[in-house]
Amino acid sequence: MVTSESQLKILDFLTSIDMDSIALESCRRYDAKTTNTSRHSHNTLELSYFLKGEQIISLNDKTIESRVYDLVGYQPGCEHQGVLTPQEVLTIKLDIKYRSLVQGCSFQLRDKSGIIRWLFEQIDYEHSNKRVGSDRMIRNYAENIILHIIRHYKTASNVSLQETFYELLHYITHNCSLDITLEQMASIMNVSKSYLHKVFRTYTGSTPLHYLNEARINYAKKLLTSTDASIQDVSYAAGFNDSRYFSRVFKQVTNQSPSTWKKNSQLII
Image (cartoon, rainbow, N blue to C red):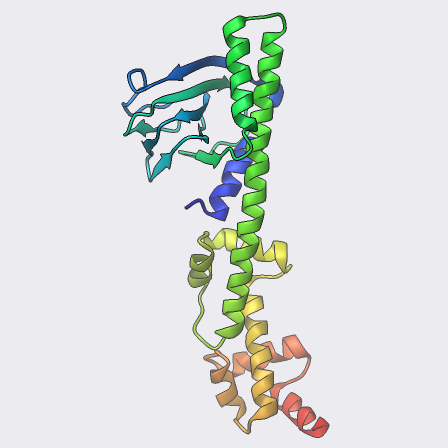
C-alpha cells in the first residue's frame, strides 16, 4: 500500500523535474526473452508501460505486481528486479534534471483512460521514424506523461490523506479518555510523527496534542455538567493523569477553571 506520506514524496520528486531538461535516452519494447531479470538501476527516469502479461517486481523494501495497462516508474538510482517476465512492455528512459530525490522511489498507476498508452505509442513512433521535430515532440509527450502521473498522485494523496485524517479525528474524539500517544496517531495515519504534525497544521492550524487536549476538555465539560464527580475524578476520566495539569489546560481552553465552569453550568441549569 502506498501511504499518503509516500505519495507526497513521489510528488516532491516528480514536481521537481525540470521539464525543459527532458531528453529521451532510449525507447524499447521488451518481451519475455529480452527483459532484464537481474537486479539493476539506472541514472535515468525509467517508465515502463505494460502492454501484455504480468510481472512481479522486487524492490529494496517491497514487491509490486504489475499487469496490462499499468505504468511503473523508477526514479534514478532505484534498484529493481523483474521476478516474473512479462510478454510485452514498452519502456522509455528519460534523462532529466531534478531538485528532489527520494531513496528507492518507485511508483505505479493504472492507465484507466488509455491516454498514457497513447503517449507512449507516440514516443515510440517518433523515436522509430526520426522525423523533423521528433525530439521536440518526444519531449512534449514525455512531459505529458509526467504531468498525468502528477495529477494522479495529487488526487490520490489528497483523497487518502483527508480520509485517514478524519478517521483519526473521529478516533481521538471518541477515545480521548484513553492514553493516546503521538506514535499511535501516526500509526493510524501510517505516517511519521513529523509528517503527522504537518498534517495537523495544514487541516487544523494546531498540533496533535492541542487537538487531543481540546477533545478531552470538551469531554470533561460534559462530565462537569452532567455528573457530581470531583474535579480530580473528572480529570482522570477525561484522560489526564495530573489534575493540576488538567486544570491548567482547562483554563487555557475555556478561560475558566473547572470549578468555575461547573458552578456556572449549574446556575444555567
